[in-house]
Length: 357
View 1: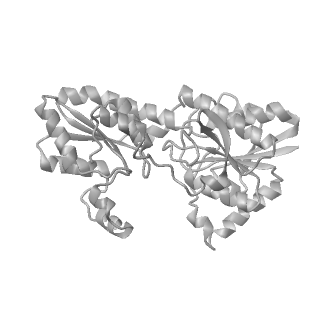
View 2: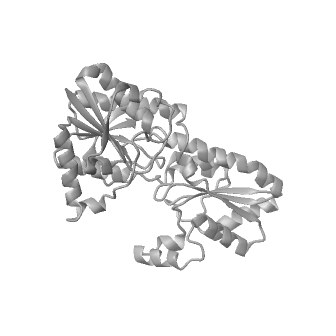
View 3: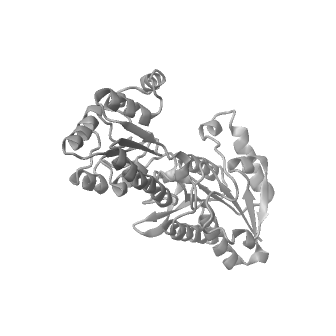
């Protein structure tokens, strides 16, 4: 009998259930219900550590294609807490659970931190296949993660809805979009939403340049402006700081939140009325888009194919519109940020969108 474990780790997002469904349906089709046993570990790596799981049947994967979140639950177990001597007992417990259940493979769905841990388990001798989940689209080795397209729809909808109220009240609106280290979601939502300014972690901004854009629009008799700001956006001054200096500077600021800080700086330099909107975790929630349902199904089916062919230590990834295996060793510890020569950035600049630089 084939024994497969599933776990979802890190932040939740749309498409997790759809992807697990894709894996399970392919495996059940191939092996049959009598020859396949599926274990769903509860709350991510914690379930693997504590040997907490449910045995799942094919019916558990029915009706979840359009369901947001994760039926298994999720949590964060930081990678740095596993690599030191204090964390190694937890790695040992994960291996013990894997061996106790006699698993043939562990299917792991998650983002960057999750993939670092998955690679560690692979190096420890476990058969692992992973699937790339994150609304940030920042996993190395692939074109697009599942969850990104759905979150993009939410963020764009927020910007769309602000256009009418911004126009009505002649206000400046700042929309803070998720993305600490990579600005993919902010970039795409900003372009799709038709904003005037996009601020990304990859392109440090000058607040005076931002103000110049707003003042120029006012001089042109344009009643409002909308800024899409990544939560990890930094100023040009901050970009020159060491990590220690940066932390100290943020601790001493009037506003720790980037959007309120920018709003305050604009207010100090102009008489413009500024409002901040932070959709936050709403971007992660709700049903997956049709695109993500298809992508999740394709990725899940590929992961099952890897398991059937005993090709372990790989992530199923979308590259050049094909689903291909990418070695975990190439993925772990790497971050895919927005390249400065991105065609999307180039197109945005050409139509007049400012990046504050």
